[in-house]
Length: 362
Image (cartoon, rainbow, N blue to C red; front, side):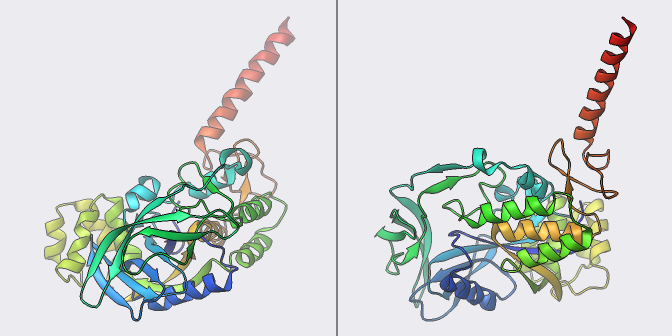
């Protein structure tokens, strides 16, 4: 389903609750340090100043912070496709399509596995010095406890000695959420917000009530921001047409507009036509308003709000748990909501009808 507005999704490696003041302070530091083109931000206590560098097709930036963290930034276009570091591996089919529906069908009690925190974790981390940036493998030990520190075993000079990761064990999520939650499997916030989303989509409230409640619950995770037009609109179009390798042209060759020559070199008429549609008379490095989401929960709240703002409502089908649209009081999927659920229900109705006719004829 097309989105009403582009999203910018920030996925942290360590997922502490935003209710902790030190965590929210670092989130704000990261937001302020973002220059609009970084794919990854490295939060590093003890760092004296910010540092930016280029690696694997994306800008990286290290910033002073109170806790260690790595944040990957992704751009979700109005077409639902995602552009960012290793986005094809983290998002199914490089898209957010169907993600909210799968979340609402999830049974946290039975589908989330809690297991002991590993004795060691190997993490690649930049060692930022005055002259250079070198990536090294850090071996860290999550310690048990309500806020367990990550203790450095072997690593670079700026060791991971004050981070926190485990909270009474790690949690293993099913796909497609396993690659979107933090390394320790999230916090108690996921269960809290999942319950609220289920309640909001129970069908008991009006669209206006759903909008108000969703926006209130989503407040910690969502904010208004800006992104370049190429990131917010054009890059997801390249991803949709499986031409994301061409995106390096914008950085490597300094492309600032959709020239006829550039479009010809793509050798893809459908992609060229799509780019002309979104980039008509726009400076591709100009800024456009977007909705910024923090973590998996921010992404899910943003998808729910986007649906509500489109006037579709958010009520779950009594059979499959997926979201349905239509008149108030509707309880089951129609053909437009889920063809699979609708077809299965129709088949069962026909089978039941044949059985009833057979019994009546005896």
